[in-house]
Amino acid sequence: MMRPRRVFFFNRFFWPDQSATAQILTDLCRELDVLGYEVTVISSRLDYANKEIQYDRREQLGGVEIVRLWSTRFGRGTLSGRLMDYLTIYYSFFAYILRNLGGGDIVVLKTDPPLLSILGSIGRLVKQFRLVAWCQDVFPEVAIASMRPSNFTSWLFKFLKLVRDWSLRRSDRVVVLGKDMQAYLSAREIERHRLVCISNWAVQEDEGGTREKELRAAWEIPEDVLLVGYSGNLGRAHDWKTLLESAKALEKEDKIHFLLCGGGHGYAALQEAVEDAGLESSFTFLPYQPLDELASALRVPDVHWFTLKEAMTPYIFPSKFFGILQAGRPVIFIGDTRCEIAELLAFAEAGCSIHEGDYSSLVEALRRYSRNPDLLGKEGSNARRLWAENYQRSNEVARWDRMLQELDNIQGG
Image 1: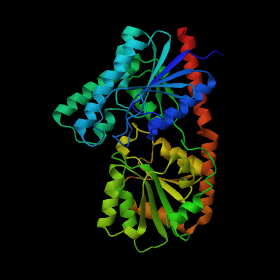
Image 2: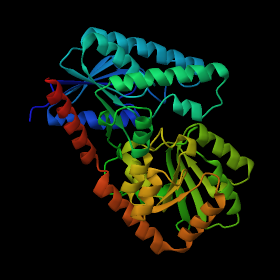
Image 3: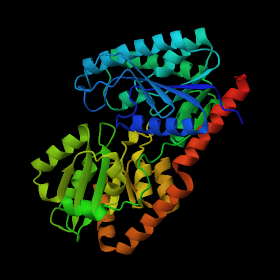
Image 4: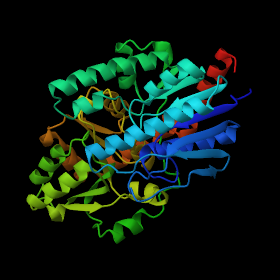
């Protein structure tokens, strides 16, 4: 079957940037290139982690053309600087849309910066391309759930929701990451036929994790402890206080140790709280691990925990879930025990889910894993099976391929 001629992806970050949205997009574009699509990525020249880095304006990644546009580069340190970076990349993206896109093109807009679907829907009034909104999260709801809006910001966010909903209704397809997000947007009267559920995936190659023993030794983690791991961003959308309280309750039990590899606002806050509580001997804090080491690093812990604040459940689906499953380790999820992730873990018997703030249940779960190696092995195998049968990258790329071909066939290319 003939593939659509040209597909344009818009996202603020792309290869070689190591942010999650950049890694997922890089994987997809490489796969679509192999399938015969003519792929162009429009991004900024910025690096997510280092504002001093400026990437080249034009570059090729295999057959993928990369066009990097101008923006300010204040970075994520201040709200005003971040807003200025957003506004200038909005301007550059919109100018590119008006100058370069046409009726035969498919345009895929991610959600970094937020609300790109609005730009696309306005541009489509002029250029009549086919439009896909790829929702990595749902804004402004994420912002509302993480702050206490003033009267002004409440009205602003209400207005942004209405305009965002209009833009999603103007999109040919809206890609969501899970059933909770799909149900929320459907309740916002986004037509069901526009909503397509395509999961993210583990960004590391499945190479078997051959260096986990070396890494555990290098990080000076004893062999005789239950190692409880966390990998990736620990931000404002995540609950770390439940884990901290459980660590306090387990302080005298030296057979449980906590390992965090990552960064973010919550990571720094937890590290400070651990020091204040005198729990340094129970924790090891490490930076983000290189992508080529990530598969091994995820296999170092005996069990992983990850978290999403209950208020964030319909708006975010944490991609780190897939890496843990691929690593073949049990999963402890701290968040809404009625959400899709909790249902998956219960169905697959691949871990457990605990309400935010229920630290006593977390203590009980950690003690249970510490005393029962067979349970670790069983649930770890079940986690790996859940990934292998449902969440391999090839499965999700095939869904993208079908959707893009469907759009091209429906609208005549």
